[in-house]
Amino acid sequence: MKQKDVIPADTGWINKAPAEFSGTPFQRIGSDWMLITAGDVAKDKGNWNTMTASWGGLGVLWAKYVAFLFIRPSRHTFEFANNSSLITLSFFGESYRDTLNLCGMKSGRDTDKAAATGLTPVVFNDEPFSGAIGFREASDILICRNLYTHDIDPGKFVDASIEHHYKGKDYHRVFYAELLGLKTRS
Image (cartoon, rainbow, N blue to C red):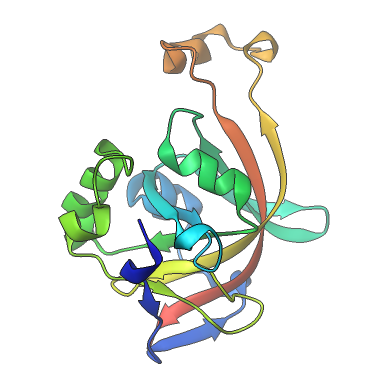
C-alpha cells in the first residue's frame, strides 16, 4: 500500500499509557484478533502492509512493557516488520470480524486491503509515534518499537505436537516490541 493511501490521524484519539490497555491478551488477541501493521510512510514511497493475527502476547521483558508478535516469513507484512522501527497493533469490535478475516486471508502483495475492507489507514505524527500507521476504525491501537527478533527453531520444540502448526515448514519469526503507547478513541 502506498503513502497516498494513508491520511494523518484525526484528533479523536486519546493517548494513554500501555498499562491502561483493557481486557486480557487471551481475549483481545486470541479471540478478538488484531491487525499488525508495519511500514514507513516517509521512506520508500510509503510502503506498508497489515495482517490479521491471533497469536501473540503482552508482558514485561527487559524492564519494559512488550508485545510478542509472530509473523511467518511468507507473509507480506514480514518484510515491513523487519525493516520498520514502529509496529502497531490495532483492535476492533466484533462488527469488524469479516474485515479481519479478509486481512488474514488475502495478501497485500495483490490486494489493497484498505480498499477491499473500507478501513481508513491513518498515520500518527506525534512523538514518539511519528510515522506509526493504524486505522481510524480501531477502538485501540498499541504503538510498539521493535527491540529484538528471533526465528523459531523446530529443533527446540519440547512438545512434538507443535510441529503440526508448520506443515509447510514456514516457521515464525518472533518480534519483541516495546509498547510505547496506547491510542484509544474518544
